[in-house]
Amino acid sequence: MSKMSTYKKKTETKDRYWREFQRENVNTYFSFQTDMFRNSVKECLNVKYDLFNEDSDDDDPKDECIIQSACSEGDHETQESEGGEADLHKYFIACKKNPGHRQFIHVDAFTLNHLPEDHQDNDLYECIKVTADLTVRVNVTMSSPHRPKFYPKTIQPYPFDNMSDKRNLRTGSGGVRFVNKFQNGVRQDGKVGFTNYLKCWCRECKHSVSSSNVWWEFYVYTATHVVFDDIEASCTTLRFSYDKDDSPVVNVDKVSVLDADIVYDLCVLYCVTCDNELGNKLMEMWKHSENVREKIRDKYPAYRSKHKFNFLVSHPHGCSKQVSVGQWKDKHSVGSLTKLTYTTCTCPGSSGAPVHCVGYHNGLSNLVHSGSFKSGLNYSGAGIFY
Image (cartoon, rainbow, N blue to C red; front, side):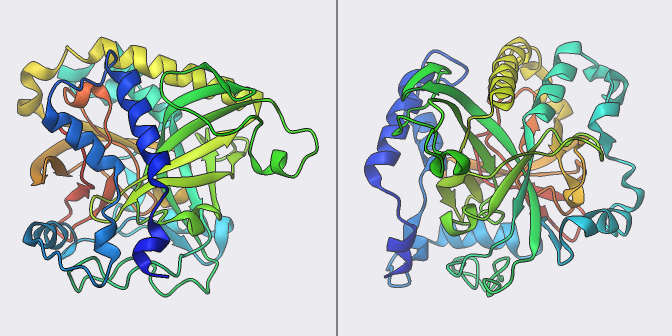
């Protein structure tokens, strides 16, 4: 079986997702008023499968330039741990990139005063807090044998190639999107999504004679180099509400890859839970995030290019959740999409964290953290930036 056929998803499922996504967001924070914007969003959801096809005749110099500019000097920021969960704090303490992690702020200690003086706005503060609520740690214990040896059309090694025989823990970050509640296969609440199931399809319910008829489905945006395909997704666990070292462990371990793009470094995970407490909490937080983004949407566009304020919430070294604030520096076109560089602090474990730039993309970003250059600048994957 060719690499291209290995990665290809069922076209009808992807098209159906896209039709639902487009139809139900026309009157919300997404605006599909121009062909360029429509194509930009769709580009983020479609995998460029031809890049995995060794027989492809497509030699687009644009793709080569994209990869070289993004990867020739930088490196991914997943956290690897041969000793598993127990060793993560050792990596945190021994960090060479940010000794002491003074530019990171524990999410439970984050206050309005941590924001720049001209951004000390209650709605912006609330936006960062709810972004933190929706940030998850992504744990992966498998490397797919289908990972390429190099980034497409370069000699830059692709992360975790030839590691399929190992089961070392690696961690990244991700952000929850589009939470939907279902009962007997009918959506009860939420704006985006459909289901092919009549009962919950989480791991526990799959092996139960009495599967729950109420469940929640949601998406998690992360980086493709964190979760590459469904082989890795089958060994992926999401940890929620890891705000402090002693936070209760709340996991979701039933995820699959809806889309993964090696060039844009964007992976969309499709997830499920029938945990009533977690499901209702995620639904509440997602609705709150929509309301908060609506409030700040029109506050900052007038001087967004002047201040270039941005923030990330991530799990550095796989440890508890941290907020970092800073500035984005430059933007680089990737077709109709954009990659950013920024000074905002990151560490191994930050890969996949949503990158938020205040005043842009109606408050909701599909940019995720991709890596760090030797110069000290960090960079995102490609996404919508308008």
